[in-house]
Length: 304
Image (cartoon, rainbow, N blue to C red; front, side):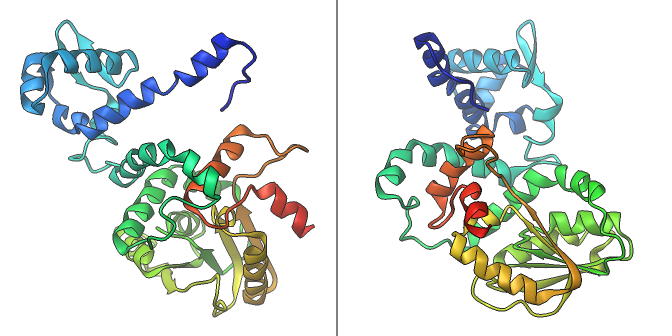
């Protein structure tokens, strides 16, 4: 969210807002929440364990406690519920993929002016390797694992028998739709490295027998098979209008008569293309990390 700035004090507050994120990132870089775990620590003992100065750690921990990330009582600290679970590498609900992505984004966003000058993503001449794709796919799972069941609960698929999760990455949405619709079968379509993560995630899911996998570059190749529903979540923004229109043609060919193509993404709604501000800021991510991605309002206008 962006608050409008009209005074120098408001400008100062906005530009100083990096401080708390940097505190949180420093804690992640030190793996502080994992080290704290489910124990209570004195500052001296924790500093020794982390091999950092007691003075520096004390200042950091007080700020973390003020933000609710740690609990402080006297001279001892313990984890918050969030710190002990999602931020703790030893806990089953650890969201390491997403945390890795957030840490790398700090370095990337510092270089925003480079992409503004060139109009190209950072390191655009360096191809993504399988390790990067794997980390990114886990990050997308960690980001959507709560929201996917909510969305699946709101979308009624009726008598649909099969669903294609196009560009579905970890298959989080496909699994959510399967959990909500016991007669449904689903296919996740994405790159091989992403599908390997999807298979790991599905391996412990009750609906795993109803999920299949389709390795395909759908931006270039026809989509095999036919489907009652094609789900296109947070993929639209990656491609140019021309590329998306070509993808839409392939989707149309893969839809059964009366089938549905459902798109979820960050859309700009106002006449000037400014709001919601989260979607406007997201366009900067597209500048940093994609060669073709644009604010989706312009795609809607071009597509009619």
